[in-house]
Length: 100
Image (cartoon, rainbow, N blue to C red; front, top):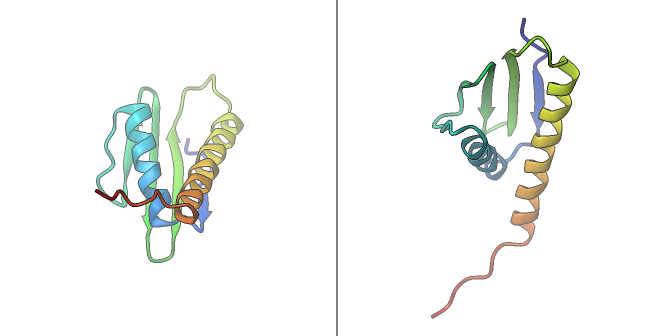
């Protein structure tokens, strides 16, 4: 049974880039589009990113029975909010240009 759809408004393109990199680092799955499914072990997540509205939707479609839904939802919320904060910090404090 799928868990409740999680909606993250204010999700900038930079935050989505961080999200894609994090998923790739953590699972080895490369996200190549704004809509898709990520499968890792016994977990299946769907995602949908709208860059114009800056909204990310994520839903856990499948999970192990022994892991409570709240654990997954809380973990997902924490990860996504951290990525949003990192993207905002990078936007506010861009790396200095390299000069030769």
